[in-house]
Length: 144
Image 1 (cartoon, rainbow, N blue to C red):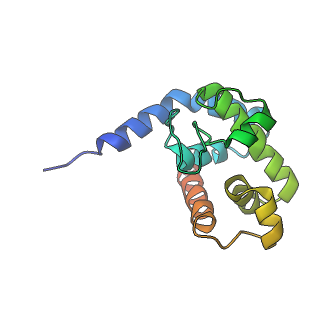
Image 2 (cartoon, one colour):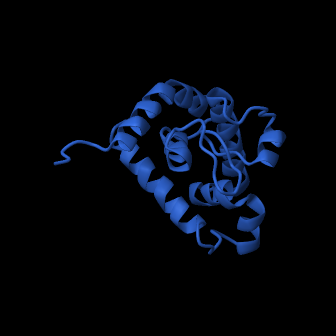
């Protein structure tokens, strides 16, 4: 009989706690709404610094190689560098698009895809991604 959280859920929560101070610091440094970066990283990697996506994104903030180079992140698996790079990129997308849901879509699909779509791209991933981050952010907000 399974009565407790799964091992994966426990590990994810534990990793989230390990990096929470770094995430909060980055949210403050880059004026990101409280809990939004935390929700994004949880959605991207479940706080696994060694995560690699099928598309080639890596680290906590799941930075693509070109985005990491642009941001000056040399080791995408370095948790502190990934958090800082992800926060800077999210801040850029917030400044560029002015709305949280569009910034999240641009973080996921790229700013060009959001501009071409005139909003959230209707691909197989981005609408669900935006919804997942926003739902996680709402859940975090109820704890803050």
